[in-house]
Amino acid sequence: MRKLLSFVVVAALGASLVACGDNGFGAGGIKVTSDFGQKPTITHREGDPEKQLVTEVLKEGDGPEVKKGELLTANYLGQIWRDGKVFDNSYDRGAPSSFPIGVGSVIGGWDKGLVGKKIGSRVLLSVPSDDGYKSEGSEKAGIKGDDTLIFVVDLVGAAGNDTPLNADPVTPSTTTKIQVSGPLNAAPKVTVPAGTKPPAKPGKPVVFAQGKGKPIEKGDQLVGRFVIYDYTGKKQASTWDAQPATAQSPAQPAAPTDQLPTVGGAQAGPLDGFVGIPVGSRVLVELPASKDQAGKAVNAFAVIDVLNAFPAPKQTGQ
Image (cartoon, rainbow, N blue to C red):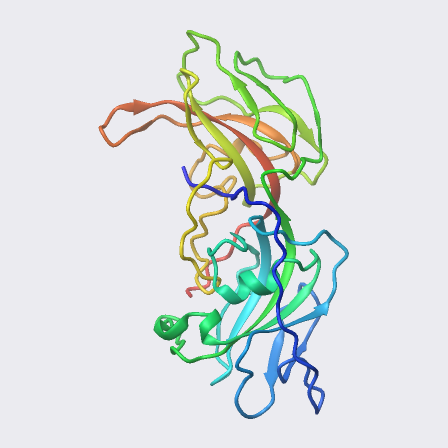
């Protein structure tokens, strides 16, 4: 049960901006073609890159500002200044990636350069090694310890543990003894009556708040926050509980830890019943039985706030 969102107070971070150069090159001597949402092409002036972090908003969005500690969803392309190699991009996978921002889960250049930018923006970053992979580099990605990296990042969405769901509370149409209540901008309050037994097999999801977003489709990857309980009423995990950040990088998002399983994938999963439920909903879902480290059977259910949904990434072999 992995944490999707960190609860961190808002703190805007600054980033340096270098004046535009000559020959049509913009900040840091870099030129970007194509529009927001399209795979960019990046060229840069000859010579060495700037030694400091460079940030330029190529197209400003009209959404809310990204806050420290939120789960940011973005499309991006990363390219090495030295040889022009594109070492990773989400556009070819056909889906954005999600990651906590501003808390050390991604490289420093992303934490410094993306917090405070508006959703819907396209942002250019020129990231020196001190704000990137440092002296270790990344052999797998072909990045050396002194490489400057160029990123174009499209900010698709962001949400925190206090982001209100765009939803209306509803009376569940499916019978359940479990009670779910509480405001839609905080962890749900869950009550499990004494003597409640786990079902013989998981049933249909139970909607407690009906979202106003697009219906979830088969094959979608969900972005959300959740709390998990066993049938004695003991909490097992929650995205509202603090958890140390992990050392991740936007160059290696193939197995994101911040997203829920794919809906209706090749193998049956607990979220398959979410098809048709609108984004923004608060949903109770019974989980398949599992075993703990001691081999003891564990039966649990989750209450999930569905914050967004995107097509699952295509496998590109990277």
